[in-house]
Image (cartoon, rainbow, N blue to C red; front, side, top):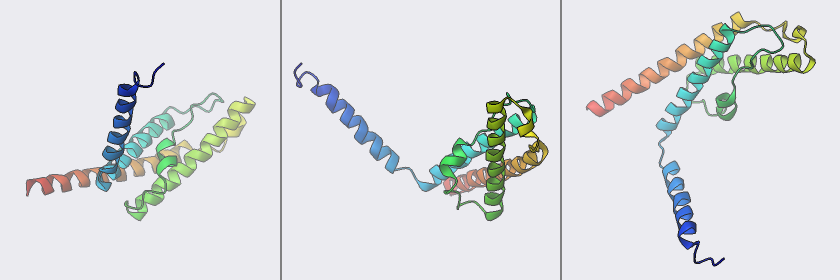
Length: 148
């Protein structure tokens, strides 16, 4: 096979990689902060739903921590109280996930005896309220900025 036959494909792939590099570099910090808060709020809402329907069986569904794991060191733009609530909630979620994993592994519900969904729901509700408030303030700020 001659490399000249594949030259358009190679150039197209290279152009796509260069385009993605420049698109990602041009994101403003505000946009990435807003996306981070939106993703974290979605994860909090999902965890609230999981907590609402949590069953103390060893087949219980684990809580989501993906956004938290990827971005827990990037939340310094949020106020300290909200940062602490988010941190406390997701540390609790991670602990509960370990207990659920142990219960699944050993097929025993005794590992989940310390799971307190009411306390978790309270923390997650505070997180949800704080994140939604941050998003509303951000949207209001952008509306005021564009209306000037």
